[in-house]
Every structure is written in structure tokens, then in C-alpha cells.
Image 1 (cartoon, rainbow, N blue to C red):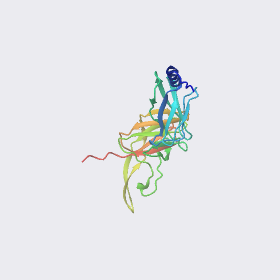
Image 2: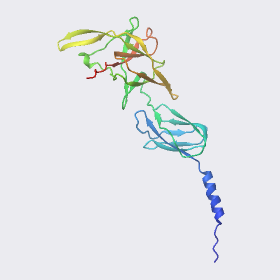
Image 3: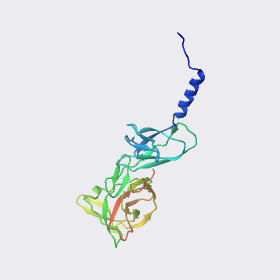
Image 4: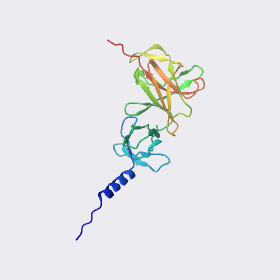
Length: 246
């Protein structure tokens, strides 16, 4: 019986053909703003059929064709994100992490803490005096206003209908004596010092990322969704004075 063998040249041509058909891939990871992996995020290249879904570790692999394009990353309950790429040669390409921001549960301003969003409490504003009213429980130390460390580059998510402006208060202090002791408390802090912030629009969800360097201490800062003379509510937090070095 004769044995027929394929010519080596034919095998080589077949291998080259298979290599030509194989598309290059992008390898990346989807994480939230707290650096935790996000599973089930859809990663796609718009106007193509290339799609992938992130695994339990947040990692994904997606095919692509070299050129200038965007990766679209979406996951319910998160603001969508895009990564712009310009690839001139086909290769296995590592992509930067796609960072998704959670959509807050309702309108307001939220501080991005180490591992969660912290809703800033809402205070009533006296429009004529440019001050806000306190709703303290006694003693004053039980005030639930979040405190953010001096010098922090703080990030906030703003879901208000109109872009919010940050103001810093200049409170005056007075002492009040109660049966439980002597307390020093702010009196009518005026929110009349506008603070510069950087704003980034996130995805299609009308969510704003606000970044500010908190290098000035104040008993209260307040986010207002409009001119201070016309706004009735402020979302507030405090920045304590830095501790003197020994």
C-alpha cells in the first residue's frame, strides 16, 4: 500500500493562511472607582461586531482591527466609559484599566470615600444672609456632617439638575455652656467664598466628577446647585484645620 504525504510547502501555506485569519486581541480589566473588579461588563468596539464580557476578575479579551477606534465599556448601575486607541500594527495589546463610577441612588452630591460613596447631608440656606441653618442634635459633636482631611484631593459625584458650585464658609465662633460642658460652635457660616474645581462629564448618564484640592480649612464647605442668592439647599462637609507638626 502506498502512503501519500502532503508536500511541506502546502503545510506551510496552510499555516500562513491560519495566521492571517487570526485577529489580534486587546487584553484589559474593568474595575470600579474603588479598584474592585467588575464582572459582567460589556466591552465593545462601536460600529463593529467585536464584543466581550468581563469575567469575575474583571478581565476581558476582545479582537480588533488596527486603526483609530474606541472601546465602549458598559455595566448597569455604572456610568459608561470609553477608551480611545490608535493602533498602527496588529499585536497583542494590553489596555489601561477601564474605571467605572457607580451611579448614586438619588439626586445630590456624593463624596468618593476609600470604599464607598458618602452622601453629603442637605442643609437649608437662608438666601438673604448667604448662610445655612443648623439642624444639630446636642451635644454638637453628634453633627453627622462628613469631615474630610485637610490637604485631600477630594472627588465628588454630582447628580444635581444644574452643575453645582462649591463655596467655603467663614464661620465665627462663640461658646455655649450646657449642663454637659462647654462647647464651641460655628454661628451662621457664610458660604461666600467660591472654590475652584475641575469637572469631568462621565458617560451618557449626566453624571459629573468634581475634583478639588482641600487646602483651606473651614468648618463648612457647601455645594450649591445655582447662585448662592437663589439657592435654598446646600450639600455640606467640613475640613478640619491641619494638626501642627511637633
